[in-house]
Image 1 (spheres, rainbow, N blue to C red):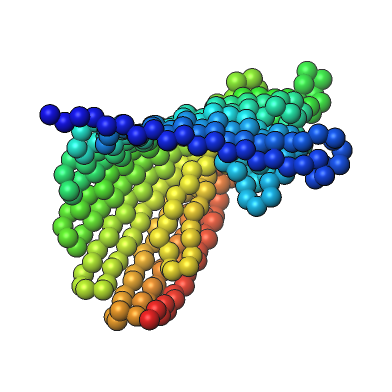
Image 2 (tube, rainbow, N blue to C red):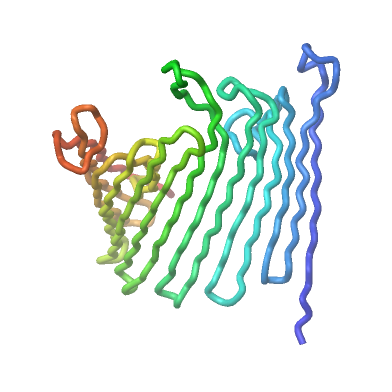
Length: 309
């Protein structure tokens, strides 16, 4: 008989900064993180993390965990995460983050809040085929510039909801030939002042290893979005030292071929073909379903010799 074991670990951290760093206030300013981690044998893991950063808090060494990038201040929230493996081959990861910005900021004239939910499911049918499904929903209040009844431009707070779906698979056809495909869909909705839009993206990767030390990778991609607001991102393989994470919007297609050759253990040669982007736009710059202009072609290419001893 197997006995289920549990491990519970609690961490709590408080950071204090004296009023000397904030001459406008004669009081101490504190920020804190409190975390609870629970592991139930090999079946599931849970984590709960509460954060609180005051309005004028100034971090000394680095940025803290939070919704916004950059300065860690004016935020409180509760993050909950879950990882479950109910049976062999199936893995489910999810989190829910509830956050609030208590005070006004440069971009928002009043207190705002929001939440973020994501679940990612991987299922391995066998050692060669893996399916992936991802769902993400994010609601966040933000300031928009809209027209009032008199036609004047005014700033109003509106709730922006973004929903993402992803479906993909990885298939090792043989030891030398691998196939991967992914489809993304996004829908953006505003509660008060309209401007809803959507987008989709699909790509297929092929990887071939014709000989020892040689690999050839290629990608064919198609995308279509209503606006920049519904852009979709995709990471691309590139030469060593270069990272490509493009935000694609409009309507277009894209492809590239990446070749790597390692003749010796300390020599690697990488060659990346140009990466053209064909987009269709009308004279006003807005994307249309009918071709009315000249395709916009952007390309990058290069190669690099990498030596390591």
